[in-house]
Image 1 (tube, helix red, strand yellow):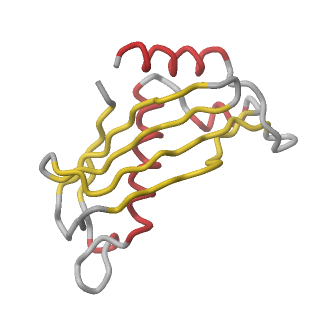
Image 2: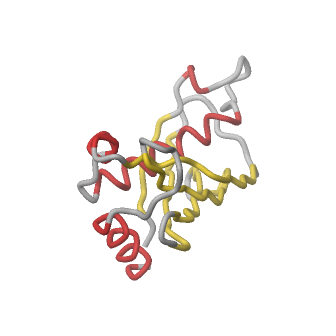
Amino acid sequence: MPFRFAVRVYIEDTDIGGIVYYVNYLKFMERARTEFLRAHAVEQQLLQQQGYLFVVKSLSCDYKHSAKLDDQLEITVTIDKIKAASVVFVQSVLHRQKVLCSAVVEVVCVSTATMRPIRFPQQIKQIFANSIDAD
């Protein structure tokens, strides 16, 4: 079962025609990944203080339909693959159960000191593993 996060489309998310500007789908997905972590009692600010940052390494996005002003969207987060220092998320933006946009996002754990990849903390790796097992 994917993690789900609700987002309302505000005027600031749209172009002059009231259509969601394409890059804002990525922002919605970023928020959903952050809320996925929060739902598992993981605070990124604390991880940063401990020397860990999560950065997007790659992203593939497929836009199918447009969201509009005032739409209530649902953003899903599913974990596809875990490695020692990276995780692949599969995400979708839906409106009334219709997929508007889908993406595959690879996130890498890096050291705050060196900005080089480092292994996920065990707690995070376990959360990711449990999420795959729950699907």
